[in-house]
Length: 492
Ligand code: FES
Image 1 (cartoon, rainbow, N blue to C red):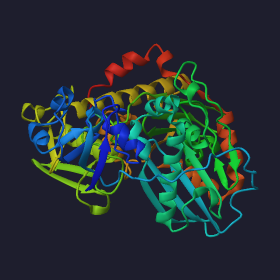
Image 2: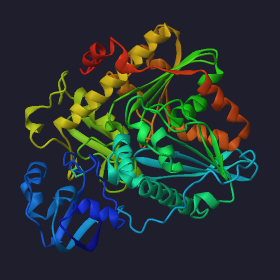
Image 3: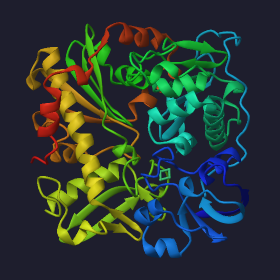
Image 4: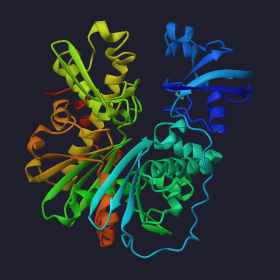
């Protein structure tokens, strides 16, 4: 679905940037570098000439129909455009979240509380009935910072260019929107209830208005990743720059730091984070898996929002899909991406090396009208799953145990719906030795925040999880590259 917009622009900066400056946030996964093809807008009038990049990224039909890439358009005058419906305008101004807010007592004193997971692509919020210890309602929405790029590096980059305030405002605007959907107000900072927030280190820095300068360059130093209370909000603690509060929250949600037995947690967010350990010792790592399972690097990829394809089956040449909310298919979210690759391999439409059958090489494999899965998409999944699987092997070796000693593997992520564990094993992303011990944990970051929202005394469990955790840097491990190449293949 698209909205029509009339806007005056000039040649000094890209249409993408000018749309952003005027409060319209078009997905721009590559951050405006002209390589993702996601920032599509359709000109109804005053169509500018297509650039070389646009001719490469868009088909002749699309170009003729008026589609252009907003990051490639440098034009002068008034134009009439169609932009995605969710490209919001008039972002509410957020007051800087400053330390002058007095800390409150324990969260959980009131009847209701709010738990929030701020993902790089998607934000989820659950209203909790604290007295009855139950979730009243959960809502999700797009993180409109996606207009600055799909991954945290592009957000860090934008923040370092002086756009940190705008990124912070976008977060508060998105949080306000979720509050409205829950019917509890529109300013998360003035809600009459405790709010518990989990997110990766970059999201939490942006939310708190902290500098992101140290996050993007060696030695990757965050300003502050400890637990904070601001007025009604609890910001959960992280472990490091690339293993943040969303993982600590997942550790607590799965009870890993409470058990004698050794468990693993694999969280497929924009990166692939992984955890191994028990109540005494935890190792964590972050694999540069890319945003394939958040739809970021997939040509028709989408966050887990209504209309995203979340399940795919292919039987005897017939493709069946479901979408979130049963709406018309608008893209593919993480669980749909996994399903697609598994099904394509099962049907031998891709071979063990990831090569698509010749007939689909040009236009991709069709999933729904206007939605295809391309050869490049398959490669993106191969890169992601190889990084994750190699990371799992390295963590296991570093912990000095075998698969037999792992009692449970939790598979987490905000995919739209829970991933199919058999399919994750089927494409070789997770070890088959653990198949019978894999549990789909859904959005474990949100679940951890919900736990604390229900029971404030759990704060000490979060601090304990941080204290016993140690980060393993995968790129420093000799075996990592070798394993990475090995797991690029699809093994059954
Ligand atoms: S192609 Fe324009 S933002 Fe990626």
